[in-house]
Length: 528
Image (cartoon, rainbow, N blue to C red; front, side, top):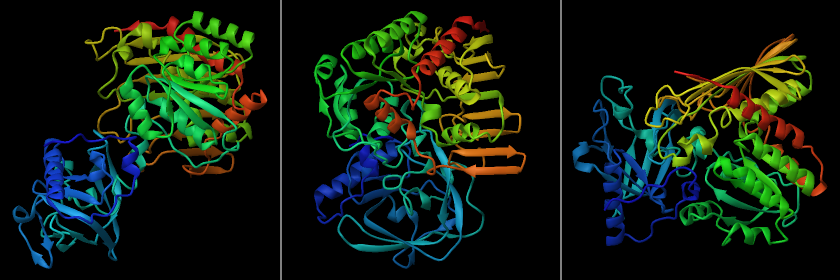
């Protein structure tokens, strides 16, 4: 029987498996089902966590791999046909003295994503089979030619040994696709337990997981979740199992303990939901883009003025990217002088499984309004401009005629009210061969130097992200800042809500970034 494979963001992929202690027919059947599942997905390895079970069990079938290696089992050279597929219960890996070599790897829980991982060249694995019999298998030994560079026939030992995705995610694990990009940082609470309570609602976009991660790491308490789609709620509770399920948004808004509602609704519904939340006396934290029309923006401004509540926006491509936050600090410290120009490139991978609303312009707002909103927010932040005019804007649907309202390319030029300029390019053309959903880059030119950000990877060099290249009057600098900066926005937002301050982001800044993306979208010429 073929089983369902769980994908990135499932908590079970991070759980350490329980040891196998009973070797019976149930274990044999589970292993057989895992083999069937692995073959059906055209894989060569599958761990129990990948089918939703945290057990120390995996299966492999290496018969399709490079035959220029010979394989040993319990001290004897053994043809693969006699030992594959193989079940490994309670596997233990011993790293033998050797150099580390890069191997291109993939994982069935991260569809279409591959990356180079450094592995020790020599290891030894001990394990038990489905009968409980112990075995020892060393690294395969090379006979003649190097293994093929073709991923389908690459030497396979890194697929399940050394650092399994089920127990220690790859650097690319947070980057499988943009719609489910949900960074996780280190806990840095700014409040005591129970001091700041929030709820999550309208789970249309996977960014809700990033919004909640950030708030929880800053010490907030997640009390409620609501969505009309029960499947979305079930998936959400797998990630956040202690959350209570609300029967409606009204039930959340009636709870006096809730201070903020985080939401990632269909874009053209976000403004109205925000108004409802603020009228109930709660602060609102929505995914980008916050609006799809200027009328929605005007209504939100009026609601903020009337209620005194906050309309916060998750501009994740700065707020949840350590290299971008590091650049924010460098610029504020005067590292490159006065900022003259910001060039922002925001390519995205379209992938599969996008909801219907994603392709309907009335609902998603257009490419400059949607993913372009990140770029306009960063332009205002890095340059210090408080307003801008749209000098040029264009959009196109070059390659998706099956979705006539969709836009897969957009560009715009802005001129800030302080003389700084901006060029933005956003698109949906990330190729499958890239190890992340988009090669997000930014170049920031100042009077005393410039900064280049390679946010999610350094192509062909490093699968990890958060690379900052700085050239100033003292020299050339390359800083890899992942894990060193953190995500302070969320703690600042919590304290702003409690203290009615504006340290995280001013309301004027939020609304101006939203206005610019709407005006650029409205001014855009349609290319063919």
